[in-house]
Amino acid sequence: MERLFLGRLIRTRASVSRSALRGVGATALSRSAHGAGTQWHEGIGLKAARGFKTGLAENLKRGSSEPPAFAFAFDIDGVLLHEKEPIPGAAETLRLLDKNKIPYILLTNGGGKRESERVAELNDKLGVSITTESFVQSHTPFQELLEGPDSFRDKTVLVTGSHYEKCLDIMLNYGFRNVLTPADIFASKPSVFPFQPVKKTEQQGLISLPQPIYSQPFSANDSSDVLSNHLKIDAMFVLNDPRDWALDIQIFSDLLLSHQGYMGTYSPKNGNPAEPNCGWQSDGQPRLYFSNADLVWSAAYHLPRFGQGAFQYAMVGLWDRITGGHELQRTCIGKPFGETYRFAERMLNAHWKRNHKIAGRGNTSGTELKSVYMIGDNPESDIAGANGYRSENGTEWVSVLVKTGVWDEARSGAKFTSKELEPKRIEADVKSAVGWALEREGFKAGQ
Ligand SMILES: [Mg+2]
Image (cartoon, rainbow, N blue to C red; front, side, top):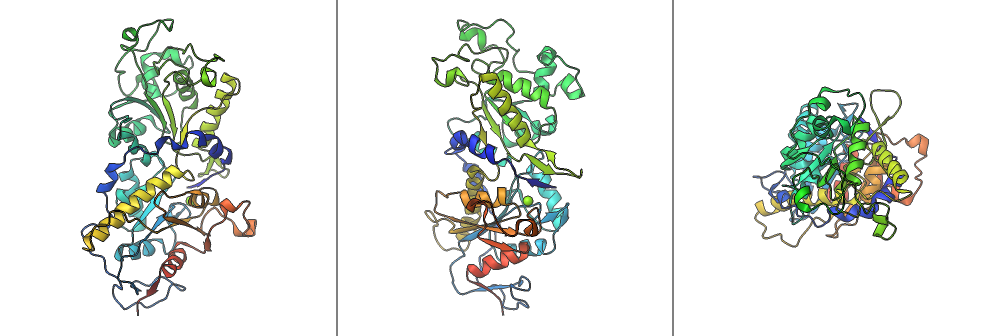
């Protein structure tokens, strides 16, 4: 399944809150390491049979004795897999990097399953041994919100996606302790959605609400004692493509209009011209997070299907109508947004530093990767994200577009509508893309 990013406008409009994730601690990442327990060797073996132009040599040779300060980030669909089947050379390429202790991660806008489940599927298909430490899907960076002074670990969060139960499982597995879905709210108070319920989970809910929904006419004079006995939502997350838009939009909108996230209340600040932003989203309402802005994606049907980006647009449009033209304040991650690239870079640095330390080459604090090669098939997401990202560490992100996915060279004539979408390099497939990068980094096929 290939995701197509068409949400150019979303990228701009969501930018007001793009920095919201920045600065949140991510210490959990430092425990990860690709190739742990192994030694770095330069010039591993000297018996390669082929050069990069005709195929990747199994053994690489490099003049420098220093560990190579570069890494790879691979998109999955259209780069490693096509229609769920391995692209020729993909598995071979990953094994080569493993063998030579060159760090990489898989960076996808997909989601809706645990990372471990998706990694097991990939290993089965590709015949490799990737771990979750080398895998970032759209909602993986939400784990950063467990850390830091504004942690949501013990707050109550609402989550939605294509499957409520799986969304709940993913968030609990990340470490969020109080997670609810719209189905839980509906089950507790069916009058929130006065339409025919269509799914059993909506009727029964998955989890009992920790507190009842506020159900009186709310006034600003209601004391905090009264409110604190009622359900309060502190953040709302969309993990992947929502299945039940109507229920989700109703409850998400209720909370965006609420007083401090208390379900069942309505903020007295809403629409007040004397308030900043006319009072909209200015009364302690829950933060809203989207994991992916892809408007449509390619599934089994012969025409593109709406994705999470379409749901986001629906909410943006509805919010515009409700508020008389105010912008929905939200955070959107996933490719091409910088937060996802920052998260990926942090993971890659952890892999690389682990390899470096294991090699006994001293303390690497203060040193970071010099280059990361983003290998992708979609100029709108993979390439634009790599081109637009500015590393805090000065790491250069090099975009490499491959021809095995959505990009159609014949249709585009290898022309790009903006500089932002233009890759540093175009290669036939992942194998030749990695070969080009290795040569650029001074590697040669072993002899
Ligand atoms: Mg792709």
